[in-house]
Each structure stands twice: as structure tokens, then as C-alpha cells.
Image (cartoon, rainbow over all chains, first blue to last red; front, side):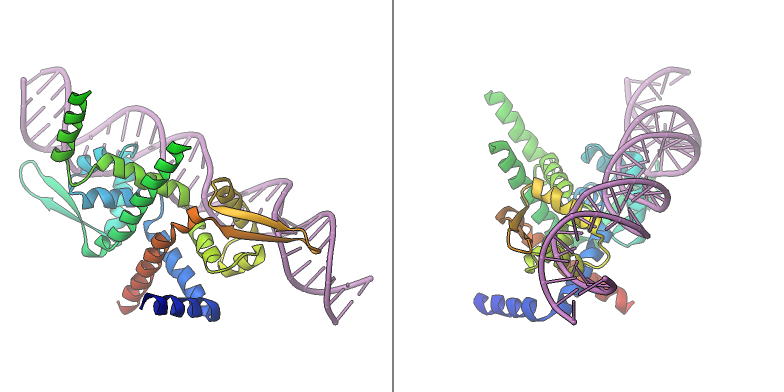
Length: 125
Length: 125
DNA sequence: CATGTTGGTATACTCTGTTATACTGGTAAC
DNA sequence: GTTACCAGTATAACAGAGTATACCAACATG
């Protein structure tokens, strides 16, 4: 079963240069949307349950209010993040990820896994 | 010593899902290593079987020789890429990914998947 | 009533990733 | 002997990502 899949994949790679271009493009699209130093950490923070501006800020070491503000706006515009104002007194603002954004979950998990292995590897050297 | 362990455990239990700080750090490490516009497309190209400088260059639309050269050097220094000179006449140079680098495979596949879905979503709108 | 928190904005600056363009030295084919 | 391919390097310039710092209005706490 898996062998067949692998074979198909191999055939695809070997005989279809157009497919390759398409994949590069897809990859670059994704990099464009979630690229930069802060977007994925922000998504991760939101996925971990942080909703308030200062909480998110505190959960990401090194980020400035300016960057957080910019990135949140950017991601809101791209419908990755939802901003909700709760008109209590005092006014509360809540940020949450959209389902669309949640689809980055797997990528983030893979990257966390890799980062941990990497740190382990460096430590051992 | 034991107190510290117990404290850490308590903190772990109390805080959100997993060890947040550690995960943010792992995520940022990974972003640091494969961040930027070109590294992942290069890895992808190498994984797709391209070994020669000009082949890699041609397989990634928009990249310049300068960027390719720089990124390859950078990744070679970080042991993600191996550079082999075959002293034929003419001299050939071959680039290949290391096993270490191959561990990005899953991340790249996830990102390609996401990019395709994204493009599809945009197209439908 | 002074201090701290929340959710940010304003201004100015740095830095480096990225682009653009030209060029090199060697080989090979026409 | 001109053209073209390979594997790059050199130089300059730019855009914008990211940093640093201060500040704001509204509310809460001591």
C-alpha cells in the first residue's frame, strides 16, 4: 500500500516538471503567509489558549508590542485571526485563531518537534 | 533539588497544555534555521533530485545566483547540505541534502499541502 | 492620588535579507 | 573564434522587517 504510494510519488517527481513548479509555488505561498520571525509563534500562542494582547505578548519572549500589534492586524486581514471586543467595563479584547489558521497546527507541531531534536543534537555535540 | 523538581512539575501541571516556553523556543529555533524566502524551496529542490547549481537555480523561479550561492553556503555550514566536487573535466559540483536536512521533509510536505489548499481557497472566492 | 494594568499607537532608527546587474575563468560545441 | 554553458563572485542599492523607546486613554488597586 505504502510502496505503491511511494512509487506513484516517484513517478510524479521523475516525469512531471510542471508539478514541481506547482509545488514550489505552493511552498512559497505558504512561506509568504506565515513567514517572518513572529507569525507562527503568535499562532502557537493563540492555539495554546492565550487570548489577551498582554498574555500573548508575555508568552512570546522578545516580541515587542509593535510587532505583535502589526502581525495581529496582518493576520486579521488575512482571516487567520479573529479580534473580538467585549464591551464590558473595562473593555476586553480577545484574539482567537480561525479554523483556517488552525490548519497550520500540523506544520507548527512538526517545527516544534524539529526544533527540540535540533537543540538536543547541538547540546550533545 | 527535589523541591525544584516538584516545583517544575507543579508549574507544568498548572500552566497551559504543554511546556509553553520550551515549545516557543523550539519553534523559534526552527524558524531561525529554515527561515527566509529561499531555504525551504532549495531543500525541496534538492529533495526532488536536483543536484547541480544551475538546475537548482532553474527549478526555483525568481531566485538569483547570489541568493542561491549564499543560502547553499549557509546551509552547508549548518550541515544541512553537502557539497561535493567531482574533479572531472569539466569540474562538476553536486549538492545533496544530509539526512539531518531530510528531516524537514514532513514540514515541507505540510507546507506544500497548505499552500495548495490556500490557492484553491483564493481561487474559489 | 500614585502606581500598575490593558490594549495598543507614534516616531525614529538599524540591519540584513533581497534584488539588480555585471563579470570571471574554465570547458565545450558549432 | 564566437557563442553558450557551468559554477559561481563583486558591487551597489533598496525595501521593509524588526528594534528601541516613549507615550496614550481608560480603568483598577493600594
